[in-house]
Length: 121
Image (cartoon, rainbow, N blue to C red; front, side, top):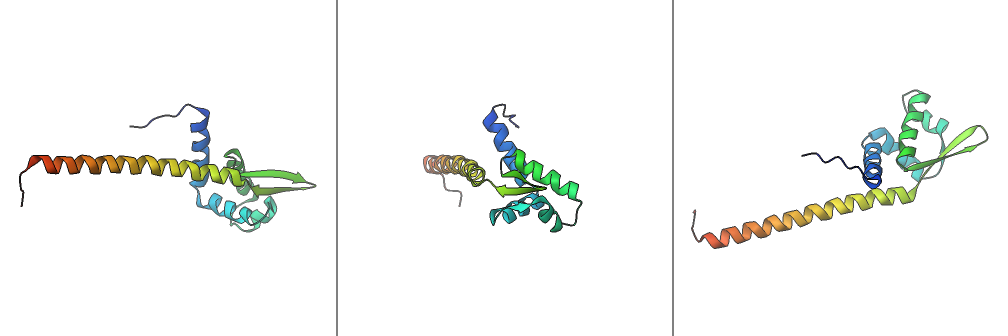
């Protein structure tokens, strides 16, 4: 079953994970964590057009993972550490939910195995 999240928080998380789903964007994010880079400098690191790099940066920006600032003729890209923390919190919440489910299943299986009294071996 697929649930279509309709709240803004759900859409924000969707944008985060969409942005992080691409290896090039994850690499761009890592590069920008070390310090702000111009879009031109980022483009020099990848075997793709400048326009393609701009599109990747736009996806990261829409997800809130980076910010762009124009300085003169350059657009500088910087990682938004708060957005990275939000992605981590979303993953932590998913992990917590799944751990709780596994714990419940383990408990149910333990109860089921103890009540039956039969030996299958």
